[in-house]
Image (cartoon, rainbow over the protein chains, first blue to last red):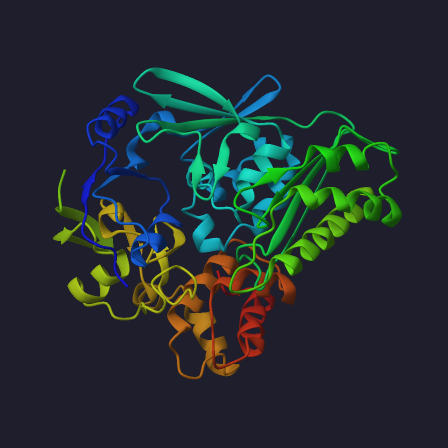
Length: 281
Length: 159
């Protein structure tokens, strides 16, 4: 279908965009790359009164190294990330990017758009949680920061208020000895995952400093501390994974028209085993 | 704020200025207002790839881009790719390899494939498949499409 009618504006500064949001009484929807919002509008599951196109705001662009962090502007496209040599400092994102949608979508889809939308099956929220990234917001009361691990609250629900904008994300760069893993199960390369996992560890023999982010399993991207603890200190063998998997009971696995919650739970385990095996190889 | 906007953009080398409803997507604008019906409209939610075209040198989904977002930009459709000769080798390979039957996916398939070839994509069949995974074809089973793209890369005259 086609999108329902709406008003459109394209502010040239962050301040102007924030004042438009503040004056819209919750009726305005920021437009980033549009690669998720436009399908939702065409399906008419989203019908914002006003679209605030963020494409003309310089403050939302750019990738910059700041000490041990890589600061990525919200309007940075997946394609810009793929093409930027600075991304080599964050190998987990580089590993995941080819799996995020398709070339033509990556050319317009943005990191900030994905994080602000918080689709439960999207890769970027889980990556940011696994990397302990920090999300920068701007609002009428000024800027504030939220750890990625506290940002995602439920289906399409985040800590970002309707009058706030996601400005950037700061991602810790990889430290010497750190290793990463990524795997997702999809029906077609580039589709939303039926279950996926991102892994970071500061050591592998035995596994140390482990972070595991799951996506496509429940109502949001999530980490399970008890599961991470159960695998930490082990050799990551099949037996160690089998012993840790019951800790995923903490996840409320969701079923949908494609697969049941039970199958999804199984897939999460499969994705984890594959990602870990490749990481430890 | 506005529900209609004047946009000016370059389409296949020609400057075009028009007033559009802001809800109009780029591929509908090109088909209905500009009369370029080469780009096809399939699913209208970014999944099938039939509307893939080039905006500012990059392949994009015409159904997930508003015409107003292309204001000031440069658009190349499948017609423009043919007129400039950029898609000659690929079109010849598609014909030679029977890489289409009904032809509905072909404009998007050509735009996607050309973006892969021109960026120096390898002739590895899995890599080609991964790249065109965003373009549905219900006729060929993709074998012949991969054959055609692979041919152009090996011949080295695609770009």
